Amino acid sequence: MEKAGDMGIGRGGRRVVVIGGGVAGSLIAKSLQFTADLTLIDQKEYFEIPWASLRGMVEPSFAERSVINHKDYLTNGRLVVSKGINITNSDVLTAEGRLVAYDYLVIATGHDDPLPKIRNERLTEYQAENEKIKAARSILVVGGGPTGVELAAEIAVDFPEKKVVLVHDGPRLLEFIGPKASDKTLGWLKNKNVEVKLQQSVELVRSSDGSNAYITSSRETIKADCHFLCTGKPVGSAWLKETILKDGMDSFGRLKVDENLRIKGHKNIFAIGDITDIKEIKQGYLAQKHALIAAKNIKILMDGQKESKMAVYKPRSIKVIVSLGRHDAVAQFPFTTLIGLVPGLIKSKDLFVGKTRKAMDLNPHIVHY
Ligand SMILES: Cc1cc2nc3c(=O)[nH]c(=O)nc-3n(C[C@H](O)[C@H](O)[C@H](O)COP(=O)(O)OP(=O)(O)OC[C@H]3O[C@@H](n4cnc5c(N)ncnc54)[C@H](O)[C@@H]3O)c2cc1C
Image (cartoon, rainbow, N blue to C red):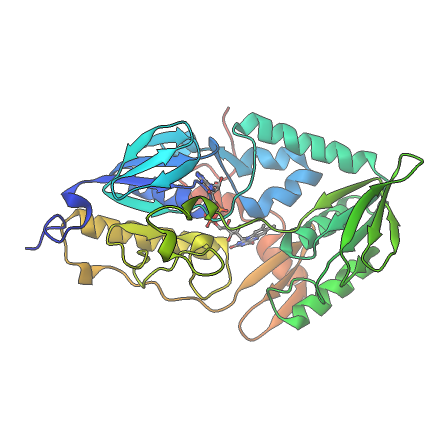
Protein backbone atom coordinates (compact mmCIF):
# COMPACT_ATOMS: atom_id res chain seq x y z
CA MET A 1 0.00 0.00 0.00
CA GLU A 2 1.23 3.54 -0.79
CA LYS A 3 2.20 5.48 2.32
CA ALA A 4 1.45 9.17 2.67
CA GLY A 5 5.18 9.63 3.33
CA ASP A 6 6.06 7.78 0.09
CA MET A 7 3.87 10.20 -1.79
CA GLY A 8 5.68 13.12 -0.21
CA ILE A 9 2.56 14.10 1.70
CA GLY A 10 3.03 15.07 5.28
CA ARG A 11 6.15 12.93 5.63
CA GLY A 12 4.00 10.25 7.29
CA GLY A 13 3.55 12.34 10.43
CA ARG A 14 0.42 13.25 12.36
CA ARG A 15 1.15 16.84 13.32
CA VAL A 16 -1.79 18.95 12.19
CA VAL A 17 -1.69 22.71 12.65
CA VAL A 18 -4.84 24.77 12.16
CA ILE A 19 -4.45 28.55 11.83
CA GLY A 20 -7.59 30.55 12.67
CA GLY A 21 -10.10 29.60 15.36
CA GLY A 22 -13.32 30.82 13.78
CA VAL A 23 -16.28 28.80 12.54
CA ALA A 24 -14.23 26.50 10.28
CA GLY A 25 -10.96 26.31 12.22
CA SER A 26 -12.48 25.52 15.60
CA LEU A 27 -14.63 22.73 14.15
CA ILE A 28 -11.78 21.01 12.31
CA ALA A 29 -9.57 21.35 15.41
CA LYS A 30 -12.28 19.75 17.54
CA SER A 31 -12.79 16.98 14.97
CA LEU A 32 -9.11 16.01 14.68
CA GLN A 33 -7.95 16.42 18.28
CA PHE A 34 -8.15 12.72 19.15
CA THR A 35 -6.65 11.37 15.91
CA ALA A 36 -3.88 13.86 15.23
CA ASP A 37 -1.20 15.66 17.20
CA LEU A 38 -3.20 18.87 16.92
CA THR A 39 -2.30 22.52 17.43
CA LEU A 40 -4.76 25.38 16.97
CA ILE A 41 -3.24 28.81 16.44
CA ASP A 42 -5.70 31.67 16.92
CA GLN A 43 -5.14 35.31 17.72
CA LYS A 44 -7.65 35.06 20.57
CA GLU A 45 -8.32 32.43 23.21
CA TYR A 46 -11.96 31.92 22.29
CA PHE A 47 -14.25 31.04 19.41
CA GLU A 48 -17.13 33.38 18.81
CA ILE A 49 -20.32 32.49 16.91
CA PRO A 50 -20.44 35.45 14.49
CA TRP A 51 -24.16 35.33 13.73
CA ALA A 52 -25.01 35.84 17.39
CA SER A 53 -22.93 38.98 17.80
CA LEU A 54 -25.64 41.55 17.07
CA ARG A 55 -28.00 40.03 19.66
CA GLY A 56 -25.14 40.31 22.15
CA MET A 57 -25.18 44.07 21.63
CA VAL A 58 -28.83 44.45 22.63
CA GLU A 59 -28.70 41.65 25.22
CA PRO A 60 -25.15 41.21 26.55
CA SER A 61 -25.94 38.02 28.50
CA PHE A 62 -26.67 36.33 25.16
CA ALA A 63 -22.92 36.42 24.46
CA GLU A 64 -22.25 34.15 27.47
CA ARG A 65 -23.16 31.15 25.29
CA SER A 66 -21.84 32.44 21.96
CA VAL A 67 -18.31 33.37 23.10
CA ILE A 68 -16.65 30.05 23.87
CA ASN A 69 -13.14 29.49 25.21
CA HIS A 70 -11.24 27.21 22.82
CA LYS A 71 -10.20 25.15 25.83
CA ASP A 72 -13.85 24.18 26.44
CA TYR A 73 -14.00 21.98 23.34
CA LEU A 74 -10.28 21.51 22.68
CA THR A 75 -9.60 19.09 25.50
CA ASN A 76 -6.93 17.06 23.71
CA GLY A 77 -5.23 19.62 21.49
CA ARG A 78 -2.66 22.36 21.94
CA LEU A 79 -3.73 26.00 21.79
CA VAL A 80 -1.34 28.77 20.76
CA VAL A 81 -2.86 32.21 21.25
CA SER A 82 -1.00 34.32 18.75
CA LYS A 83 -1.20 35.57 15.18
CA GLY A 84 0.25 33.42 12.44
CA ILE A 85 2.67 35.68 10.55
CA ASN A 86 4.57 33.36 8.22
CA ILE A 87 4.65 29.79 6.99
CA THR A 88 7.33 27.65 5.39
CA ASN A 89 7.07 24.12 4.00
CA SER A 90 7.50 22.74 7.51
CA ASP A 91 6.59 25.38 10.12
CA VAL A 92 4.29 28.20 11.10
CA LEU A 93 5.81 31.29 12.65
CA THR A 94 3.71 33.19 15.17
CA ALA A 95 3.85 36.86 16.13
CA GLU A 96 5.41 35.85 19.48
CA GLY A 97 8.30 34.27 17.59
CA ARG A 98 7.25 30.66 18.11
CA LEU A 99 7.85 28.04 15.40
CA VAL A 100 5.16 25.36 15.19
CA ALA A 101 6.06 22.36 13.02
CA TYR A 102 3.42 20.63 10.91
CA ASP A 103 2.88 17.65 8.67
CA TYR A 104 -0.53 18.95 7.61
CA LEU A 105 -1.55 22.58 7.70
CA VAL A 106 -5.06 24.05 7.57
CA ILE A 107 -5.54 27.75 6.83
CA ALA A 108 -8.86 29.00 8.26
CA THR A 109 -8.19 32.70 8.83
CA GLY A 110 -11.48 33.78 7.16
CA HIS A 111 -11.58 37.41 8.25
CA ASP A 112 -9.22 39.62 10.11
CA ASP A 113 -11.14 41.05 13.02
CA PRO A 114 -9.27 42.92 15.74
CA LEU A 115 -11.11 41.38 18.71
CA PRO A 116 -9.76 41.27 22.29
CA LYS A 117 -7.59 38.27 23.16
CA ILE A 118 -9.53 37.22 26.23
CA ARG A 119 -13.17 36.08 26.53
CA ASN A 120 -13.93 38.30 29.50
CA GLU A 121 -12.72 41.37 27.64
CA ARG A 122 -15.01 40.46 24.76
CA LEU A 123 -17.98 40.12 27.16
CA THR A 124 -17.10 43.53 28.61
CA GLU A 125 -17.14 44.95 25.09
CA TYR A 126 -20.72 43.70 24.68
CA GLN A 127 -21.69 45.42 27.93
CA ALA A 128 -20.14 48.68 26.71
CA GLU A 129 -21.89 48.49 23.33
CA ASN A 130 -25.17 47.81 25.09
CA GLU A 131 -24.66 50.84 27.36
CA LYS A 132 -23.94 52.93 24.28
CA ILE A 133 -27.22 51.82 22.66
CA LYS A 134 -29.23 52.35 25.85
CA ALA A 135 -27.81 55.83 26.40
CA ALA A 136 -28.54 57.01 22.85
CA ARG A 137 -31.79 58.44 21.59
CA SER A 138 -30.65 58.26 17.98
CA ILE A 139 -28.30 55.72 16.41
CA LEU A 140 -26.62 55.63 13.02
CA VAL A 141 -25.76 52.25 11.53
CA VAL A 142 -23.28 52.41 8.65
CA GLY A 143 -23.40 49.52 6.16
CA GLY A 144 -26.36 47.67 4.69
CA GLY A 145 -24.88 44.17 4.49
CA PRO A 146 -25.99 41.38 6.86
CA THR A 147 -24.26 42.92 9.89
CA GLY A 148 -25.78 46.40 9.46
CA VAL A 149 -29.23 45.06 8.66
CA GLU A 150 -29.23 42.62 11.58
CA LEU A 151 -28.02 45.31 13.99
CA ALA A 152 -30.57 47.90 12.83
CA ALA A 153 -33.30 45.26 13.18
CA GLU A 154 -32.16 44.17 16.65
CA ILE A 155 -32.23 47.78 17.88
CA ALA A 156 -35.55 48.56 16.19
CA VAL A 157 -37.21 45.53 17.81
CA ASP A 158 -35.72 45.82 21.31
CA PHE A 159 -35.68 49.63 21.50
CA PRO A 160 -38.58 50.83 19.31
CA GLU A 161 -38.44 54.28 20.90
CA LYS A 162 -34.98 55.00 19.47
CA LYS A 163 -34.43 56.66 16.14
CA VAL A 164 -32.37 54.38 13.88
CA VAL A 165 -30.84 55.51 10.59
CA LEU A 166 -29.17 52.97 8.30
CA VAL A 167 -26.87 54.32 5.59
CA HIS A 168 -25.57 52.09 2.82
CA ASP A 169 -23.36 53.10 -0.09
CA GLY A 170 -24.74 50.49 -2.50
CA PRO A 171 -27.95 50.57 -4.54
CA ARG A 172 -29.77 48.05 -2.30
CA LEU A 173 -29.53 46.35 1.07
CA LEU A 174 -28.09 42.80 1.36
CA GLU A 175 -26.45 42.96 -2.05
CA PHE A 176 -25.03 39.46 -1.62
CA ILE A 177 -28.50 37.96 -2.13
CA GLY A 178 -31.33 38.67 -4.58
CA PRO A 179 -33.12 42.00 -5.17
CA LYS A 180 -36.45 40.60 -3.92
CA ALA A 181 -34.89 39.90 -0.53
CA SER A 182 -33.45 43.43 -0.52
CA ASP A 183 -36.82 45.02 -1.30
CA LYS A 184 -38.62 42.98 1.35
CA THR A 185 -35.98 43.84 3.93
CA LEU A 186 -36.21 47.53 3.09
CA GLY A 187 -39.98 47.38 3.54
CA TRP A 188 -39.62 45.56 6.86
CA LEU A 189 -37.13 48.11 8.23
CA LYS A 190 -39.23 51.07 7.12
CA ASN A 191 -42.20 49.48 8.81
CA LYS A 192 -40.18 49.45 12.02
CA ASN A 193 -39.42 53.18 11.52
CA VAL A 194 -35.81 52.65 10.52
CA GLU A 195 -34.77 55.38 8.11
CA VAL A 196 -32.75 53.84 5.26
CA LYS A 197 -30.51 55.91 3.00
CA LEU A 198 -29.09 54.11 -0.01
CA GLN A 199 -26.19 55.06 -2.30
CA GLN A 200 -24.68 57.35 0.28
CA SER A 201 -21.51 57.13 2.29
CA VAL A 202 -20.96 58.96 5.56
CA GLU A 203 -18.25 61.06 7.05
CA LEU A 204 -18.12 61.66 10.80
CA VAL A 205 -17.75 65.25 11.95
CA ARG A 206 -18.25 66.69 15.41
CA SER A 207 -20.72 69.58 15.70
CA SER A 208 -19.87 72.72 17.64
CA ASP A 209 -22.49 71.76 20.28
CA GLY A 210 -20.52 68.58 21.00
CA SER A 211 -23.08 66.21 19.48
CA ASN A 212 -22.19 63.96 16.58
CA ALA A 213 -23.15 65.02 13.12
CA TYR A 214 -22.59 62.91 10.10
CA ILE A 215 -22.39 64.32 6.60
CA THR A 216 -23.41 62.01 3.78
CA SER A 217 -21.93 62.02 0.28
CA SER A 218 -25.14 63.81 -0.84
CA ARG A 219 -24.24 66.57 1.67
CA GLU A 220 -27.13 65.60 3.95
CA THR A 221 -26.54 65.99 7.69
CA ILE A 222 -27.59 63.18 10.01
CA LYS A 223 -27.62 63.93 13.73
CA ALA A 224 -27.18 60.87 15.89
CA ASP A 225 -25.94 60.29 19.42
CA CYS A 226 -23.74 57.39 18.35
CA HIS A 227 -22.87 55.21 15.40
CA PHE A 228 -21.87 51.64 14.63
CA LEU A 229 -19.67 50.75 11.67
CA CYS A 230 -20.85 47.58 9.98
CA THR A 231 -18.87 47.78 6.78
CA GLY A 232 -17.43 44.28 6.58
CA LYS A 233 -14.07 42.88 7.48
CA PRO A 234 -11.09 42.27 5.23
CA VAL A 235 -10.24 38.72 4.11
CA GLY A 236 -7.70 37.29 6.57
CA SER A 237 -4.96 36.60 4.05
CA ALA A 238 -2.80 39.75 4.07
CA TRP A 239 -0.28 37.89 6.26
CA LEU A 240 0.17 35.23 3.55
CA LYS A 241 1.27 37.61 0.82
CA GLU A 242 5.00 37.10 1.38
CA THR A 243 4.81 33.37 2.16
CA ILE A 244 5.02 30.14 0.15
CA LEU A 245 1.30 30.63 -0.56
CA LYS A 246 1.67 34.00 -2.26
CA ASP A 247 0.93 32.47 -5.68
CA GLY A 248 -2.01 30.47 -4.34
CA MET A 249 -4.35 33.47 -4.04
CA ASP A 250 -6.86 35.06 -6.39
CA SER A 251 -7.17 38.83 -6.88
CA PHE A 252 -9.47 39.08 -3.81
CA GLY A 253 -6.85 37.45 -1.58
CA ARG A 254 -8.79 34.18 -1.45
CA LEU A 255 -6.89 30.90 -1.46
CA LYS A 256 -7.38 28.78 -4.56
CA VAL A 257 -8.39 25.28 -3.50
CA ASP A 258 -8.97 22.04 -5.38
CA GLU A 259 -12.01 19.80 -4.96
CA ASN A 260 -10.45 18.13 -1.90
CA LEU A 261 -9.92 21.57 -0.30
CA ARG A 262 -6.15 21.51 -0.65
CA ILE A 263 -4.46 24.68 -1.81
CA LYS A 264 -3.58 24.18 -5.44
CA GLY A 265 0.04 23.06 -5.80
CA HIS A 266 0.34 21.96 -2.14
CA LYS A 267 -0.20 18.35 -1.15
CA ASN A 268 -0.41 18.85 2.61
CA ILE A 269 -1.91 22.35 2.98
CA PHE A 270 -5.67 22.77 3.15
CA ALA A 271 -7.81 25.91 3.25
CA ILE A 272 -11.38 26.06 4.54
CA GLY A 273 -14.11 28.61 5.20
CA ASP A 274 -14.46 32.15 3.90
CA ILE A 275 -10.80 32.37 2.88
CA THR A 276 -11.29 29.93 0.01
CA ASP A 277 -12.09 30.88 -3.58
CA ILE A 278 -14.98 28.36 -3.76
CA LYS A 279 -17.74 29.78 -5.94
CA GLU A 280 -20.53 29.98 -3.39
CA ILE A 281 -21.85 32.57 -0.93
CA LYS A 282 -19.57 32.80 2.08
CA GLN A 283 -21.55 31.23 4.92
CA GLY A 284 -20.68 29.70 8.26
CA TYR A 285 -22.69 26.53 7.71
CA LEU A 286 -20.68 25.97 4.52
CA ALA A 287 -17.43 26.72 6.38
CA GLN A 288 -18.48 23.93 8.78
CA LYS A 289 -19.00 21.56 5.85
CA HIS A 290 -15.53 22.44 4.53
CA ALA A 291 -14.09 21.68 7.97
CA LEU A 292 -15.65 18.21 8.07
CA ILE A 293 -14.49 17.34 4.53
CA ALA A 294 -10.93 18.56 5.18
CA ALA A 295 -10.84 16.63 8.50
CA LYS A 296 -11.86 13.47 6.67
CA ASN A 297 -9.23 14.02 3.97
CA ILE A 298 -6.45 14.66 6.46
CA LYS A 299 -7.35 11.43 8.27
CA ILE A 300 -7.18 9.57 4.94
CA LEU A 301 -3.72 10.96 4.21
CA MET A 302 -2.46 10.38 7.77
CA ASP A 303 -3.58 6.75 7.51
CA GLY A 304 -1.57 6.37 4.31
CA GLN A 305 -4.60 5.76 2.15
CA LYS A 306 -4.69 6.69 -1.52
CA GLU A 307 -5.35 10.30 -2.45
CA SER A 308 -8.16 9.10 -4.71
CA LYS A 309 -10.11 8.12 -1.55
CA MET A 310 -10.34 11.74 -0.47
CA ALA A 311 -13.78 13.33 -0.22
CA VAL A 312 -14.78 15.93 -2.78
CA TYR A 313 -16.44 19.23 -1.84
CA LYS A 314 -19.19 20.43 -4.16
CA PRO A 315 -20.22 24.11 -3.97
CA ARG A 316 -23.73 24.58 -2.59
CA SER A 317 -26.66 26.52 -3.95
CA ILE A 318 -27.84 29.64 -2.19
CA LYS A 319 -29.48 29.34 1.26
CA VAL A 320 -29.25 32.43 3.43
CA ILE A 321 -31.25 33.59 6.43
CA VAL A 322 -30.75 37.10 7.79
CA SER A 323 -32.43 37.62 11.14
CA LEU A 324 -34.64 40.67 11.70
CA GLY A 325 -34.86 40.93 15.45
CA ARG A 326 -36.15 38.23 17.76
CA HIS A 327 -39.00 36.82 15.68
CA ASP A 328 -38.63 37.67 11.99
CA ALA A 329 -36.06 36.97 9.29
CA VAL A 330 -35.58 37.24 5.56
CA ALA A 331 -34.58 34.07 3.75
CA GLN A 332 -33.21 33.49 0.29
CA PHE A 333 -33.55 29.93 -0.98
CA PRO A 334 -32.77 28.70 -4.53
CA PHE A 335 -36.31 29.25 -5.82
CA THR A 336 -37.93 31.56 -3.33
CA THR A 337 -37.57 34.49 -0.97
CA LEU A 338 -39.45 34.64 2.33
CA ILE A 339 -39.76 37.27 5.02
CA GLY A 340 -41.41 37.30 8.42
CA LEU A 341 -42.20 34.77 11.10
CA VAL A 342 -41.67 31.58 9.07
CA PRO A 343 -37.94 32.07 8.33
CA GLY A 344 -37.72 33.75 11.73
CA LEU A 345 -38.79 30.48 13.37
CA ILE A 346 -35.72 28.80 11.88
CA LYS A 347 -33.12 31.31 13.06
CA SER A 348 -34.14 34.34 15.04
CA LYS A 349 -34.92 33.11 18.56
CA ASP A 350 -31.68 31.30 19.39
CA LEU A 351 -29.65 32.35 16.30
CA PHE A 352 -28.38 28.75 15.95
CA VAL A 353 -26.32 29.18 19.12
CA GLY A 354 -27.55 25.95 20.76
CA LYS A 355 -27.08 24.09 17.48
CA THR A 356 -23.53 25.41 17.02
CA ARG A 357 -22.59 24.61 20.62
CA LYS A 358 -23.94 21.08 20.13
CA ALA A 359 -21.78 20.66 17.02
CA MET A 360 -18.80 21.51 19.25
CA ASP A 361 -19.90 18.83 21.79
CA LEU A 362 -20.89 21.52 24.29
CA ASN A 363 -24.08 21.82 26.31
CA PRO A 364 -26.42 23.88 24.09
CA HIS A 365 -28.03 25.67 27.05
CA ILE A 366 -25.63 26.01 29.96
CA VAL A 367 -22.22 27.60 30.32
CA HIS A 368 -20.05 26.65 33.31
CA TYR A 369 -17.45 29.22 34.36
C1 LIG B 1 -23.80 39.37 11.01
C2 LIG B 1 -23.46 38.07 10.39
C3 LIG B 1 -24.44 37.10 10.33
C4 LIG B 1 -24.16 35.89 9.74
N1 LIG B 1 -25.14 34.93 9.72
C5 LIG B 1 -24.85 33.72 9.25
C6 LIG B 1 -25.82 32.67 9.35
O1 LIG B 1 -26.93 32.85 9.84
N2 LIG B 1 -25.49 31.47 8.86
C7 LIG B 1 -24.27 31.22 8.30
O2 LIG B 1 -24.04 30.10 7.87
N3 LIG B 1 -23.32 32.18 8.19
C8 LIG B 1 -23.57 33.43 8.65
N4 LIG B 1 -22.63 34.40 8.58
C9 LIG B 1 -21.34 34.15 7.88
C10 LIG B 1 -20.33 33.42 8.75
O3 LIG B 1 -20.15 34.10 9.96
C11 LIG B 1 -18.98 33.25 8.04
O4 LIG B 1 -19.18 32.62 6.81
C12 LIG B 1 -18.03 32.43 8.92
O5 LIG B 1 -17.69 33.14 10.07
C13 LIG B 1 -16.74 32.04 8.17
O6 LIG B 1 -15.99 31.24 9.01
P1 LIG B 1 -14.40 31.15 8.90
O7 LIG B 1 -13.95 30.17 9.92
O8 LIG B 1 -13.99 30.93 7.49
O9 LIG B 1 -13.86 32.59 9.26
P2 LIG B 1 -14.02 33.43 10.60
O10 LIG B 1 -15.23 33.01 11.35
O11 LIG B 1 -13.85 34.83 10.16
O12 LIG B 1 -12.77 33.01 11.49
C14 LIG B 1 -11.45 33.39 11.21
C15 LIG B 1 -10.61 33.20 12.45
O13 LIG B 1 -9.24 33.37 12.11
C16 LIG B 1 -8.61 34.20 13.09
N5 LIG B 1 -7.45 34.80 12.41
C17 LIG B 1 -7.46 35.68 11.36
N6 LIG B 1 -6.19 35.94 10.97
C18 LIG B 1 -5.38 35.22 11.80
C19 LIG B 1 -3.96 35.04 11.88
N7 LIG B 1 -3.11 35.65 11.05
N8 LIG B 1 -3.48 34.22 12.84
C20 LIG B 1 -4.31 33.58 13.71
N9 LIG B 1 -5.66 33.69 13.66
C21 LIG B 1 -6.17 34.50 12.71
C22 LIG B 1 -9.69 35.15 13.52
O14 LIG B 1 -9.42 35.67 14.79
C23 LIG B 1 -10.90 34.21 13.56
O15 LIG B 1 -10.96 33.52 14.77
C24 LIG B 1 -22.87 35.64 9.16
C25 LIG B 1 -21.88 36.61 9.24
C26 LIG B 1 -22.16 37.82 9.84
C27 LIG B 1 -21.08 38.85 9.93
